[in-house]
Length: 481
Ligand SMILES: Nc1ncnc2c1ncn2[C@@H]1O[C@H](COP(=O)(O)OP(=O)(O)OP(=O)(O)O)[C@@H](O)[C@H]1O
Ligand SMILES: [Mg+2]
Ligand SMILES: [Mg+2]
Image 1: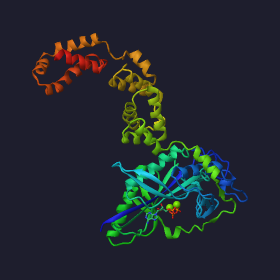
Image 2: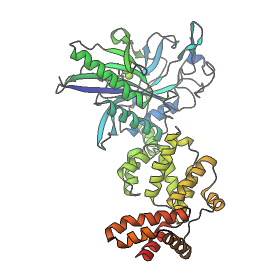
Image 3: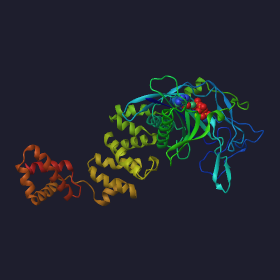
Image 4: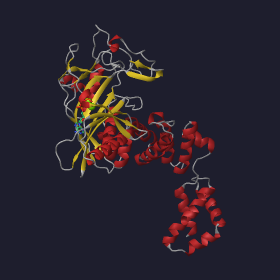
């Protein structure tokens, strides 16, 4: 049997508001347990939630970012379930009337093609607290700092057809929320988490198969691995003639397997009803226009501009525009250096990203900032240094800081552009290599093109990398021919 994979993602994004969605408590990450939980977050009787306007604005920004309909009126509902980290016994969420309606996200696949994934809805809700299983012997601690943290749950249509597409979709959402500045998107701190719904159906079939939902996947790598593990498991079951039962599962990265938490039939009776403590949220056309007017340039527009205005390749444009901070870095380097955008693109995407990757750093943690790299490329652009020397200076900037100009000055790295000095070095190289010279002079034009490399290399070496490469080529051609 040929199977088709069907996937839908629920992405929970923590909105970067200063205070919680229904209380004035702080939302800073990493505080001592229970120091950021007010009476409202603790679910004490008699308290009333007050909606945070910034959370609403951020949800609307997201909706506009995916070209979705913003609901003029949306309603908060109580999602009832019992769990120790949920003192109220219900989570305030949105159910029938979410704030963001149907929209879409375009993803780019590895072969460069794009695909449109539908977004069914995005709704506002509060996060629950956290159980601490390791802090107390034989007991579980409860930390309610996270309770009431504003979340936007973004629910996709089941349009995704492979683990790789799911990763591309998660990355597109991640890029978008950072561009829109509605979340830091920090996955290791739980600011973005994915629930991955997976099912299989016979190829050509229209109706959906039964889904299992992998909860709380918190890295792109695990999205891919967890989904593939789940696909493999479901395929085995189906091939063995067993039916799939709807269930909530977790991914175990050590065993590279998914395992069931609970079957959905028992767990899914949330008895949603409108929250009587909260008024419906009304967003006027005027408010929407005002928020739309403040939207920044989004990834798709930026990619377009990098291709048409800066003449970057589509590949370079996509890499550099994938993250707002990275794009900003690149644009600063271009502005600072006056170098060709292509040169700046190579330096940022090869040298800088390579070094960051090697050291497991994010762009916002780069030891070399955009002004420093801009200053370095300026000196390549005006021929003060060669690209090779620039790499040496880059390392120095990375390890010890400073500016390209002070390093060039103190280490005497300025490129040699005095033709008589270069001629003297070339003469030396020719005098030292009689065999190679003889070989060169006996060769035809085509062979000579290859043999010249030896002389260029020797000249650069003798000049300690400082001779201007174009001039070296010219002088060599003159002397050898
Ligand atoms: N048969 C299926 N195979 C794969 N994905 C599916 C299938 N049916 C639905 N989905 C996806 O599952 C997700 C369902 O999310 P939704 O928030 O609507 O409900 P839920 O998972 O039941 O609720 P909860 O928010 O409590 O987890 C959507 O992304 C949807 O596209
Ligand atoms: Mg959901
Ligand atoms: Mg779900």
